[in-house]
Image (cartoon, rainbow, N blue to C red; front, side):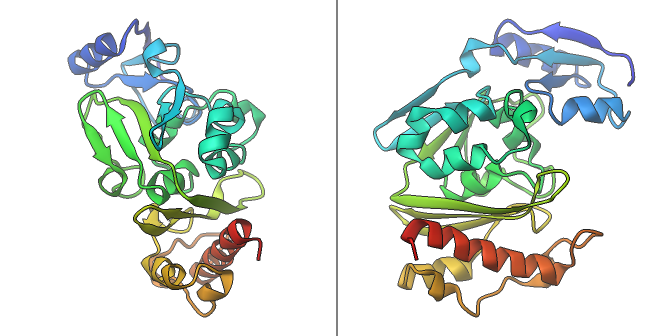
Length: 266
């Protein structure tokens, strides 16, 4: 680990100003990705700006057909929140599948979304539900936020303040986890929303994406059988020592059917 200076921000405003003055500084919330990266000497920030305890980044609220989750909310809080379980049970279920108890008690939803790991779980829910990412500067639609592997629409110094999720009519998440890391080799979030069916896939490709063909099929017949014969383009998926592109394509199809089955009971 390279040397750095530690700064504990007293407000989002202070954190933003410090980042503007120190371009090589990094934000620290849960640190579940940042700390291992530092330990492996894959990053060399000048400062770590701790925003983990800010009241501005805490809290979960539900009302008017929307669920608001502050960026500093821990995964465990999302998984156990009565408000989340009532509004979007699938989101609470997803949060409980992240990592292990240690990760769930430290990692934050804002940090995960901002990091945009291609195998992370939250991006599937954010895109699948058509959520809005509210930052210190603006509101960004999920469709515009995720821009590829570890890449988002966030500008330097911009901080995720909260996630705004429209409450779906019904939704479910199915995941095939890597046996060692727990990350998704393929995770599929299916939601029936006010504007139609949305199917978001994580873990299988360089970034989260919507499976439009599945959405169209389920829009005509919301049943696992409607997905029979459908397959994502394997050429656009990841391939590594753990799975071929074709294997991941099959996983996506299987997880999609399982998610629909969770919703329909079929």
